[in-house]
Amino acid sequence: MDKKRANGRYYTRGNPFQLEPFRRWAIAVNLEQQTILEPFAGAKDIPQLIASTDLMCRNWAFYDIEPGAKGIVQQDTLADFPTGYNVCITNPPWLARNSATRRGLPFPEATRYDDLYKYALEQCLTNCKWVAAIIPEAFIRSGLFLQRLCDFISLVPQTQNGTTTQENTTRNTNYMFEDTEHPVGLALFAPNTTGDVRVWRNNELLGKFSELQRYLPPRSRNRSIVFNDPKGNLGLFAIDNTVSASIRFCPPAELGAYRVRNQCRSITKIGVPWDVDIDKLNAKLMDIREKTHDVFLTAFKGLRRDRYYRRRLDWALARSIIDGENSLLQM
Ligand SMILES: C[S@@+](CC[C@H](N)C(=O)[O-])C[C@H]1O[C@@H](n2cnc3c(N)ncnc32)[C@H](O)[C@@H]1O
Image: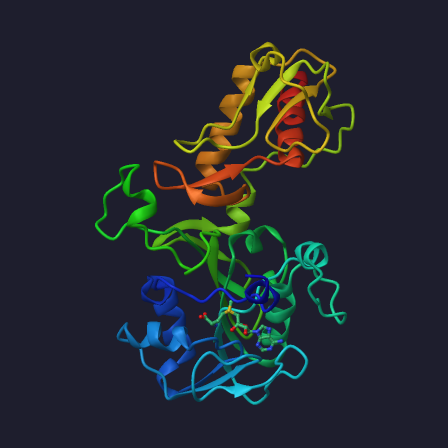
């Protein structure tokens, strides 16, 4: 498993290339006329997926540090990236720096990024005009490479028979990867500045990134709101349960004898130096979730029973919601 992890090697499964936004990108790229670079080719799954749609390209060029099929040039493309290609379609290696450190795995010294996929993506974007990459869903919240990003698709697994009952959630779900249910996205980049990013959930257009951002409350730096405060006057369940969108603020008494821990990111008590209106906070939270389609909330492994990713509300956004409601009261 660690060897697999060291090379960030989870092969692509499921087919995001039949989705409408990718098909539009393929037309803009003029895919039929292009030789496509796959710099982290693995077992050549991506060309097979594309071939299984009705999209075609002229040719492929494959590289991998540890080829998983014939016809792949063995090369460390992170150190020595192939040049002369206009278009790159890939699923680069993923490996969090802290995970590499914890497991004693090598991590390139040439990069300051916290994950290998960001470094790999930077190499692709430096060397190719058009890039399509399957990467962690969290990428859209990283603020990286937004200038050339034209579309970002949150790839939500779908059951093969379209049903939604709990018992078939794991069994029949068409996950994007063989070994992991990690939330993933498909990022589509163009040669020049794009102005804005269309954000999708599979084939559903959720909105433009800048428009979705407008539904967020102004960022608060109010440090008088204290998280993980054992005497706090506000409780928070910060992670969805496995059934539905259940994140909510609550009276601290509801948390009973729950002992607040400093590192905990799921349940907390918050010290707020004014009387909070919990119903209003929850209404605001639901409003934001609905209007932003959860684009700014971190997704978790595994789907809820309602077929959406479980999400987590981070402290920064929780603080902004609490502070924002207070500012409204004072107006
Ligand atoms: C996430 S897998 C994806 C494989 C393939 N693109 C797919 O979608 O099925 C990442 C691939 O990157 C390769 N890889 C990791 N580090 C590399 C490096 N420095 N140079 C070239 N390939 C590398 C791994 O061997 C692995 O095959």
